[in-house]
Image 1 (cartoon, rainbow over the protein chains, first blue to last red):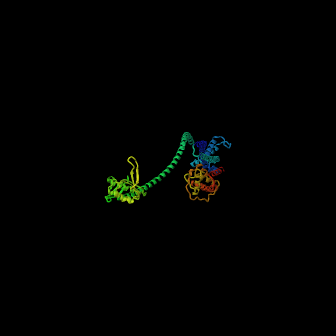
Image 2 (cartoon, each protein chain N blue to C red):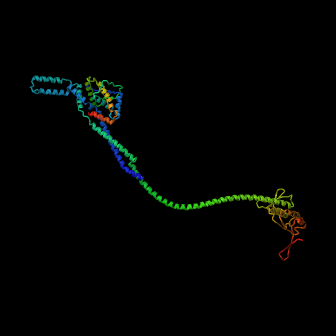
Image 3 (cartoon, rainbow over the protein chains, first blue to last red):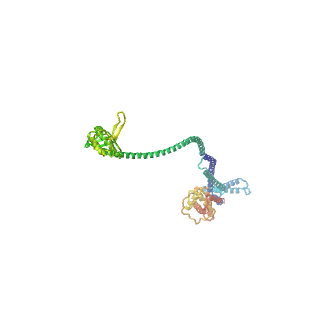
Amino acid sequence: MKIEANSQESVRAKLDELDRKGRERDRVSGELATMDIEIERALRLAPIPLLLEYVREQVSDIQRQSLSTTRRGALVSQLEGLLDSPICICGRPMDESAKQHVAGQIKSTAGVTLTVEAIREDNLKATLEALSRYKSPEIELALRRRDQLVTDVDSLTEEIARLKAETGDVSPGHAAELWRKVGEAEMNVKSRRESLQRLREVLQTLEGSIGSLRRERETLASRQQETAQLAEQARLARGLFEAASELIAWRIDETRSVIEDETSKIHHAVTNKPDEYVGVEIADIDYSLRVRNAAGRLLEPESLSAGEKEALAFAFIAGLNIASGKSAPFVMDTPFGHLDINHQRNLVEALPKLPSQITLLATDRDLPPQLLELIRPRIADELLISRMGATEDASIIGAAS
Amino acid sequence: MIRMSERTNFRPSAEAKGYLDKLKDDHIFGRSVDGYAFAAAVAMKEAADIDALTIRNRTDLTEVATLDDEVRLALESGAIVMQKRRQLPAPADGAAMVEIVSKYAEVGIVMLRERWNGKTALQIQHEIKKLMVG
């Protein structure tokens, strides 16, 4: 804007010149208009100089054809003066006969009627005489001046057009307004520079923050990458866990089903109520054992008798052993103490059907001879355990007799 | 001396009036009738022949009285002298005087039109000046 204002200031002189030229053109145009009117007026009378020859000729004709009233009046006056004079104009004395002749002439001349027509003719002749002396106006000078004025107006118009083109649409008022705006703009610039400085300081601080934030962002990005990897691993682990859980649940169900089947078979063999108890089931929540009766009800172990509990325990342990597929050695310590005779026989008869090596610890009361005889063909070895003495904490294992 | 009837209209041919209007529009003369009078004066000065002329397609221009009296008087003088030189009787009345002046004007317009063809208004005015100063 300042540049523009300087530019405007430089054209101010041109604007002044433009104003001056405009006024000059108005003045010259006015003079030209006046000169045109003067020329027009001169041209209205232009036929006269062309016809002056004819006017003069007409004046001469009229002079020849008529005596003017003026001349007649002058003649009468002259004749009247002659009557009073003693000598005639020819030099001879004015005698009586001469005076009578003059008086007759005065009478005849004065007797001529001055008609309106004659007066008009006299006036016309006078006008024609005046016209015959007509002098043309200085039209040449007027035309030259007019031509000069036309040239001046054209020149001024051209110059004004050039100045207008150079100054555009700028006016002096516009230039002053621009300078006022320059002042305002400079104040704005100063204010904005101060603001800019403050902003630079803020920017510097922010740039520092940006550096640390960038580093933090990079750290976070790497962490984010790690997090993403971990999340992926977690997702995989969760998938594996879910698959494993599903597999485990399936495996549990399968194993439990196998255990239940094996346990139920053995329990059916050892129980003394094979018609009442139809199977053994393992609970979902705590894996406790229940016996399903023929009516479909599940019986808690607490509701069974002591012998039935032992039969159920034997069936479950044996079932687990079979279901494990390992055929682990099976050690039984005085297992028949709480069993009735039917349970004892059932259990003893079931022992040879187990796929495991069985070590049976029993007293002669636990395993009376009739029961022992039931399994003797299946016994690999029979040992006798006896105390060494009442005061020694030791036993002697020897071959049974 | 017979003078033109002031209340009579000049009645040039349509063609002549068209040229007079152009002269006025080009600001050569302020009025058409001024060009008309000038044309008549030129024809008289150059002793143009008007015998064979018959003005056709006539149209009203303006009243005779619109001309300055001095111009009228000069034209009338010219008409009378020209009639005398041509050994013709002077016009019998104002209308006849108007007709004689009109014939000279009609012939003069044709002459001027030929001379001024292709010239600017300023050039024509300078031509008029030359004719005026003889």
